[in-house]
Length: 95
Image (tube, rainbow, N blue to C red; front, side, top):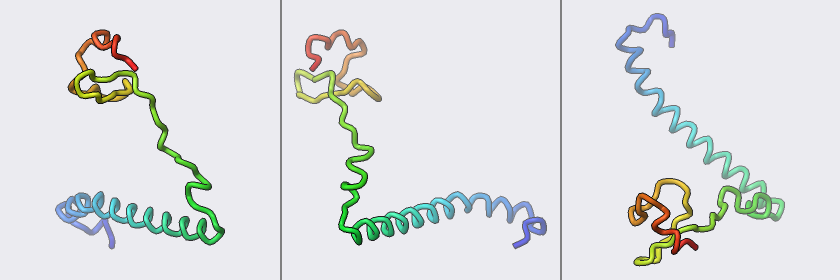
């Protein structure tokens, strides 16, 4: 494929299709690599958890609890709808 001989319309169409194709190829490659890694780990008698633990699954201790529903929030990320705008209003129910 010679890009210099393509028309502008053809190039723009190609430009629109590329992100979708690239994302699909990356996902397929990631799955292939994950499967190969899992096979290699199993071949040697280990599990992925043995080698990597619970990577990426850190548990954050909740700081606030909704007295009505009992739901909790760690104070990280977007505040839940039950949390008032001023956190100090919930200071007495902090965990």
